[in-house]
Amino acid sequence: MLHYAYGAVKKSIEAYVTRAGGHVIEVPLPFPLNSNDEIVTEFKKALEKGKANGRRVRLAVIDHITSMPCVVIPVEELVKICREEGVDQVFIDAAHSIGCTEVDMKEIGADYYTRVAQGCGIAPPGGFP
View 1 (cartoon, rainbow, N blue to C red):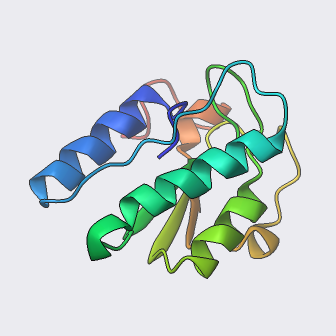
View 2: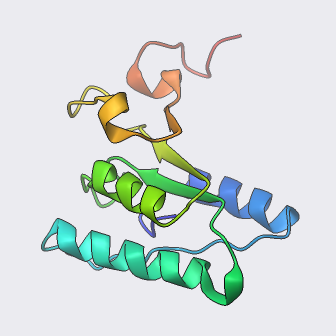
């Protein structure tokens, strides 16, 4: 999971993974970022850490566009790396990307690409009843 991940997503993932007996590996990203290469390098380091001692990475959670700071993440490249490294599943948090950038879910290749409807103005405040 990226260090820049949305707070509620981070807390949810941490709570679930901890209850399941797993470990959350956070990808530290510098600020400011100078290039996508920095993201890719840090992501690869985190995958190595996650796979240490014979462990496997069950789920990678990646923001397409982070909330704060606002950074467009090279999700296609990170998903490809996940596939090459044997990550079981890839979840893309698309909360800030749909409508802000072109999205081709087949090209991205993630197992999950999702966002909540309420955040994009098509749901009533508080969600659907």
